[in-house]
Amino acid sequence: MAADPSALAAELMAMAEADHRAAVHANGEDFADQLAWRRLTARHGDRLAAIMDEHGWPTADRVGADAARAAWLIAQHADRQLDVQRRALRLMGRAVAAGSAGPRELAFLHDRTRVNEGREQRYGTQIAGVRDGRPIPWPCEDPARTDEFRAEVGIEPFDVYVARFSPA
Image (cartoon, rainbow, N blue to C red):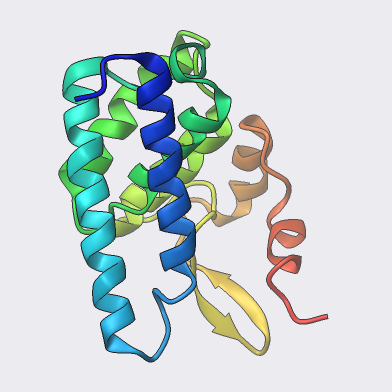
């Protein structure tokens, strides 16, 4: 296990880089690529669980902002490991309360975890699909207040957010 904060940061960054490379093919038509993505995110989820056992949540003050964001990304993509996502959500929530992590990333992980649990999301960050060229979020608990909730954690309004995904 990486006890040195710089080694831990380097490990988290390497995992995020591998995630970015593999994510390009995660939803493609090649089943081998999809399987490779699943295996990678499972390995990364397992490693993040071990990191949380040893270090708690890897905050920016411990590992640097980029590595902390990498840890969040790994948790975000641990879709088939709800125990890892739930634990990351709890630990990251404590870090946000202590001022050691950002509420924006916590909101994305909150929504991702809830969607993976089959529940409604709060912030509208998770997209279910595209209809008539417009991204459609997974169901939200209070759709009329979604932009209000988003503003509270520093996320742009839903229409601005989905415009990035819409064809020009």
